[in-house]
Image (cartoon, rainbow, N blue to C red):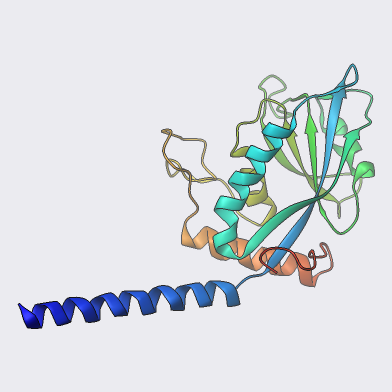
Length: 211
C-alpha cells in the first residue's frame, strides 16, 4: 500500500508537470489577437442584430480558437450603409469590397443572405472573395446566424474546407453536442494565421490577450 501510494503521488506530480508544460507550450505558441472590423446593416434605422448576439458569436470563436493561440477583438464597429440589407446576388456580395477596412478581418452582418448557386436557399454565413477586387476577402454573416457561424466562417478564412464529421465546426451535421475542431484543422488555422500576418494582410493587435 505504501509503494502504491508513492507511485500514485509520483504519477500525480507527473501529471502536474505535464499540465505546466502544456500551458507553457500554449503560451509560447500564441500567434496573437486578430482585429475584427464589424459592420452591421440596419433596417429602418435599427441594426439587424444586437450586442448580445454579437457577444455570443465572439465568445464561441474565442472558445474554439484561443487554444490554438489565435484570439479576436472587435476594433471597430459601425452601421453598414448599403442600399439593401438583403444580399441576393454575387454582385451584392462583391459590392461590400468597397466597405472593407485595411489590415483587419472584415465582418459584415446583413439582414439576409441568399445562396447564389441555387438562388433560393437562405445562407447563414459565407467567406467571400470579391470578383471585382480579387485580393479583397471578407466574412458575411446573416442576422439568422446561430452562435457558431462566425467561428465557422473564420475556419474558412483560415484555410479549412467543409467536414462531414458530426459536430465538427466545419460540418453542417449537428447533434446539439459541443462543437469542436480537430488537430489537423487546428494546424491549418495556425499556418494560415501566420501567413495572414507575414503577408501583411492583417496587422495583429498590440497588447491584446494572446499576444
